[in-house]
Image (cartoon, rainbow, N blue to C red; front, side, top):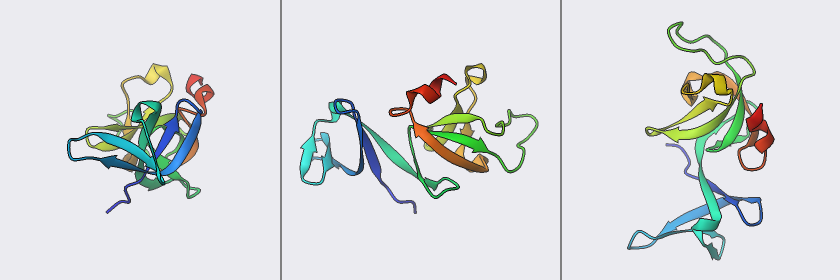
Length: 133
């Protein structure tokens, strides 16, 4: 079973908070908890840990930007990830996946278990310049 963890991007302070807890009350209201401090969730983008680490041991979260290093080709009927291609991690249909940043490849995505080795190079909050490549 994978570890359930979250981190949160603080839109106001433009800072990432790690090891947060996401708390729900009896009526379904939620809030993020940073130790003893409870904060308004409108201020934060809360993202989940995928349960995977990159080839350098760094944890991979939703919203991370990764560089692909596939070890073996996929089926020729499907688009293959390109060596060194960058993508962003997102959650889709019950699974974490990678969507290539290259706009010419829109509509394509790869599930994390379909890839070889990858490296986290940033995230969509702190490294927006990587989304333009």
